Image 1 (spheres, rainbow, N blue to C red):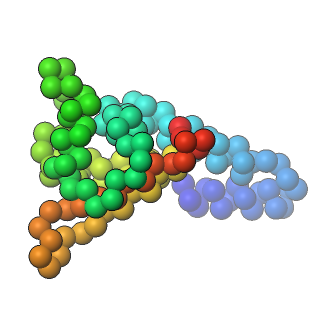
Image 2: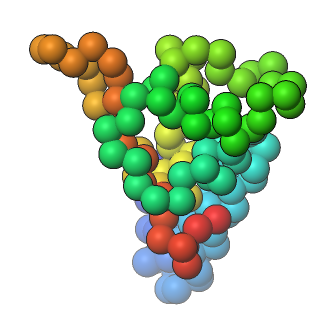
Length: 129
């Protein structure tokens, strides 16, 4: 997709301002929003994280998400049931969240750090999708 974005920008330069790059960027953002809306985990994450979460473990984040989802409400089949599963899902949805203006940082384990940690920073309120 990044290569196609370069081609579209080059077409704008060669043929004058055709607004192709702006339309393409808008379509990519719309697609990212639709993907996030269709994913129960991404949607719940967008509801839960209103302020930056710095260096939170996957287990702590899963507890927050489970609490908001509701303990009596059945989980979707793709809902992570462990911290390891949540880390895998976050890794997969990270590009989509970043296209929506989020900052998602995975802090790798090493040394005395045993648990995988994440920093999640939502977009500013006016930019939130």
